[in-house]
Length: 418
Image (cartoon, rainbow, N blue to C red; front, side):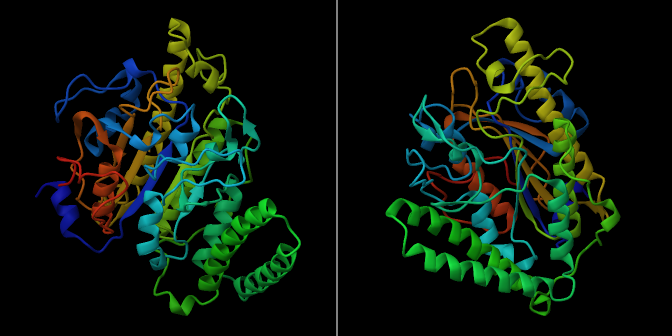
């Protein structure tokens, strides 16, 4: 029996879904494999996935129509998982005009685990206004939106992520109940403060209260474990708690990916998003041999051969981190299957060529079989400007949370579902 078919027949293991977002696009000539179908060869940027070729799908010619016409980066990133057009603003009335794909799934199955979803990143939320394009930089820090005005807060400290997973998988004593009482006091004080604020500050406070209410709901669930018919599939070892945020960027990324794997292995959550960096991130990649400079600066290569060479090395490094997570999930066994067999891990960017801010033909990869629902081991190329939303319709179907339509979708992606 084929491996994918065997995985589909065993419905005892939960499905997981993760999204890994890479800022600043890719070297377009080094990304797409020359051949399509199952007989494709990996491109130079995808070389780190050689031993995982049968576990992935390369998807070509998808784009997010909602990002059409938006200046710079911000429309591309904040609409990456919503496939909508964000409202242009300097910061008071942020609005993505949709709900992100991951949260559509979380709202249907999130109550089956202690944490409905996990949002992770590397950099703090950017603040201020990008005067070059007239957008608040907050947009560049989020891909996960629980509502049009509510970007989900990301955790960037691996130690705090571990502690959250540990507490969620087994609350100690009345800790969760005490936290709920504390948040109740915060909400009461905030409501009293609201009456004395102006319109703009009231809007900001309302956004804050929305986040607090979401946190309060999660804590209330944790304080009543008897109401959640859930047990951790693997116990967390407190001795494995990370020390904190490391100085080295590469180590920081690795630890955050480890927490996703741990969250999936323990079944503390089944949905996660991770941002390698905020959009317009200029993280220095001088730790890579042959690279001297920041990511965003090199993405504006101006077709300079040496800039393109360095840009491609940074792309390849990100793909290698994606491969690291896929291997880690592949090595985590669940009976005769692996966690990767029962997962979907999306990797992509809201831009193609960072120099042109090009939203066409996005660099998109999907790893894992989703319990046998994803036909991996192929390069699928679609007609030019096929909706990215069609991928999300397919993923939500494979995840067990189907929708008739998502944003500008026209149907599932042909050839992706097994």
